[in-house]
Image (tube, rainbow, N blue to C red; front, side, top):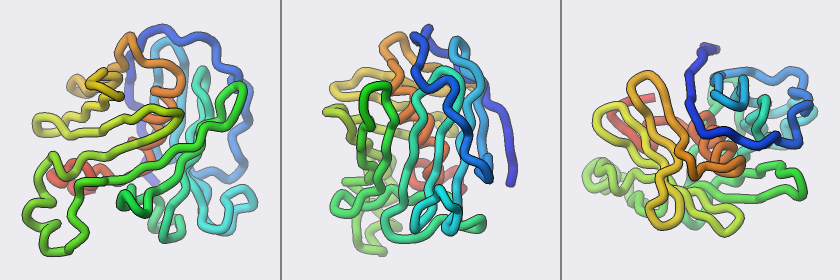
Length: 202
């Protein structure tokens, strides 16, 4: 599987409590970032059948200075051939868990405005508004949107921008905290970019 490093700039983060969290043995790494002020972070997967992967497999986020996190598929298994998680509908979302310093934070990932009808997906479903990804956790709501041709923007709650791309780099805003960083990076590493940006096609 391809592996690459993306630079991500951010505001300074306080020390995370899981700096020494061990990477699960046998994890397949698919993406890596170097986060200013936090260090190296990886996104990968544990396929179905892995001792720590659960019955369907899962996506994982680990790294220096971030809270470890996991995403679980709703309707299908994660394998080496199908290693990403579809966001799901509002009624059947994918589930994520962020391991905070005091408790685990459970959240959900869906596409509430994507039409369920297959024909509608080929018409109104191609609009960017319909392709937005929603993430809900700890009383917050994040929206992932495609911007311009290849850009990505993530806003939280009432229009607070926490992440956006700038050319080959990405930037977290000063408002972003540990939960923002873990939720955003886990989701971007775990779902197909074509779910929110069909022009990318992968």
